[in-house]
Image (cartoon, rainbow, N blue to C red; front, side, top):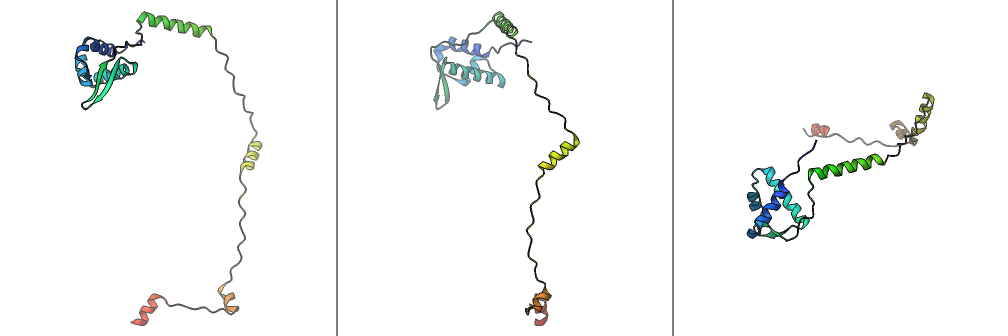
Length: 166
């Protein structure tokens, strides 16, 4: 399946060379001159302008009204091929591709099957050892504290304080 090339860049270049007297142009003037009516066509014209500036065919200068384009006098370096030339180049590429054989692909070595016991052993080896729990000293109970001679001070709760006040 062959696709036609977009005629917009060639149309833009032809229009610019025909209307060199009216230079400099704004992007809007170039779109109107080339007959770009839809948004897609205007976008294609802007892409062609960007390409022409990059190739040195146009010079872009910024002004208060926006970018203005002017011819530089240099030709376009890109060579436009005819369909016959394009097909000939494709045939040459295909012929080169056939003449240079590709080396055979090397297959990756197969991993050996492991027995269930080996898989379980490997999994056990990769399982981390649980951290050791530090032994906590035993805490003395209230009875042990009282037997040792300790005193417990009982603080009243706020509701008990409220009952006393009432």
